[in-house]
Length: 153
Image (spheres, rainbow, N blue to C red):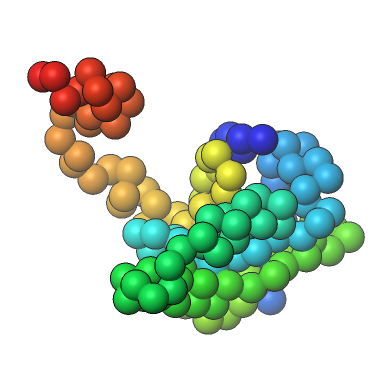
């Protein structure tokens, strides 16, 4: 399953986030199994439906823990990882320390893709999306082209 969409939401006074109905429909049974929330990349939070988190854990379990870079990555990646459940009103409670890490105050953007949902402070997300990334067509070619074909150039 691959998730899709961008949703603007607000946290309530207790730090709860109501999962938007468009996203809830995509999650179907996955939302009932709960989620894992962790520190994401570039200052966001990563929300994984539990079944998707289990696939990530399988990859993590394959890492050689005798390599220092692997241990460093695991510590950072799993730092603050928390199991969350959706309540009867379709809300999840974001832990305060993870809200602080991501600079989340009230308004957030949920950006769903592949196996996760990134949770961003809206201002940070807007800043990121407005950053100059150079020529987007060139970036797309580098990222999306066949690696063997790209090496020939």
